[in-house]
Length: 437
Image (tube, rainbow, N blue to C red; front, top):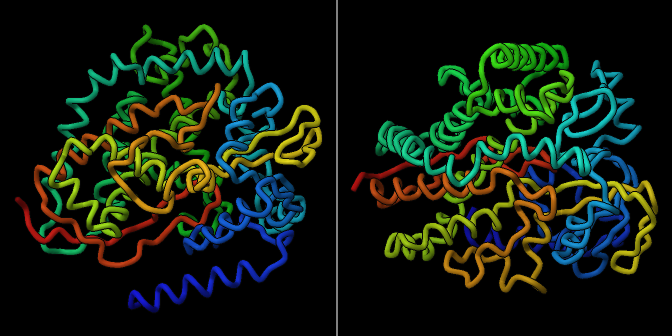
């Protein structure tokens, strides 16, 4: 598609969104994220209805919060906005009925309550704080210094194995590989099992037919294998003296050693997705963003000292997790609307990161912004991402190693995006490296 045709298509899409009644706008549609068509929805909601009531659709009814400062008000007030109802949008009652009819077993979502796994991100203090404190040493500044040479060695190995002058999938060959290697190390797993983590992360977040598996029976079987693998790791670590990996920390931590298997598996799911999807999608997003903005790529090559700033700008611009959910514990006034006790409240980080009342020229990708770390992507308050520094470190290292090897990486076509309202990422992205330095 030519540039003029693309601009016409964007204008047509924007006009279509602005022609709808404001109350009918529903951004909680996975196809909008798959097609990268979310932006005019969020633009209009921020301008006209920033605390927007969304009745039940495929997802449960909720308040959609789209402005930066309103999101901050929710995220930093865990006393009023609880995480215990799950931290991502769940299906509506109508959708649950459809899923059950298709063979799904609705036992609580991976990020919700109910009979399914629970995790510390879906808890409130003090229990949240106790469990988070148990695993946080794995990503402490001291431990990151120890891990840095290993991450750099692996990044170099991955990049040196890439074909030159031939198309390949950057998501598979680079983004998934580096994050899976790092996460396997954190879990104390054999490296030969690392791509299971990629598979299981995708499995948790997808429905049959989304490109991972075709049926609920397949999903159940693979989720059972995932659970079995980590229950075996738990038993192994329990029987040994404490070590420095995440499973051992959970097995021996005062606040976690007696947790039941659902709680343990919930935390494993959290750490898998938190350590996998977010970083890998930001690595891919950095390649895409710099190709879309060749002036910024040239600026980066001319001044590699901008890598840390570019990393933060990519994390803002990409926003690898599009939203987080809370449940109101009492009536609360926000943006002129009364949120009732028990209402679901969704913080659309992806929208807040494009709020021009707080961030100047937010739709632009600018790697030398004055305040590049001013973004919502890691969350705020007690639930701020525990592994944010590790994510930044991996991105910094991979780009230091890229610039030492390749003068150019070409994105050959629009990437395939994940059909998810939660994980904002890429299924595949075809690229070519014309030559090495």
